[in-house]
Image (cartoon, rainbow, N blue to C red; front, top):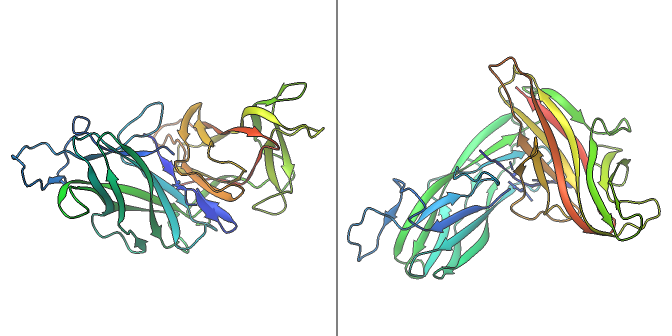
Length: 352
């Protein structure tokens, strides 16, 4: 099953939520396509000319992560440490595709009262015509926890998408669904720290660089560089910089796919484990995280350039076996232009 993360802006960092971009991977997709979805008990039709058909005409689907799409509803993972603003701004990328034979006005709002600390306001999406697809971002707020002694708390919010015949007067159909958020506090004493890379010893601490930079100028293609940098950092004085950077400063490139990579192991005694890292780049919109070669995360809401973002992602565990779980983590970008680089800092692997 895929997961999502929230990009969260950090105190001068920002949050990414496995991923939600707190300012969270693939898109959520809502379709009015009855042939695609099972009916849910919460669906209802108020069509005044209804003939009592048991089939409802509107439902909700999460597309999941490529390449193996699934219709599981999303989970978001958010590391709250140093995240800003407060309350946390959690953005969810959604899509409505109207495949009915009529146009409808759509709205998303809370279906039931959220847990304490949440603000879930309604959003009127407007008219969506027949065969029209509309992408939009839905924003909810959660007051930032000051601490989480257990290390992680899980909170679902129950949302509903409604379709109306007219301007939010007569309801046509609706469907509700849960979005689940997991908030992590990496400073909690309940975690075991399996890894912490802050690069403050002046080394890359086991990370490597991969990919290829396609330079406009000779010698043409070359691998990216991975160096310790004092330009930007989350923990003083260093971060590690990945980029298409040449000694002669002839850095203009005609496209590149470059990545950070490191293997992480989780002993079988642990039930759960998470990777948390901070990242800054001129363009994070093409960021993707691969586990053992399989794409497991990409942002669904474009992060703001040149801000620190914090990403939280669950790692594989093998609890109940004698095996150690190892994951090859790759943080990858597709880039072009000049002086293309990214900065990585404050990497944690926590488990319990």
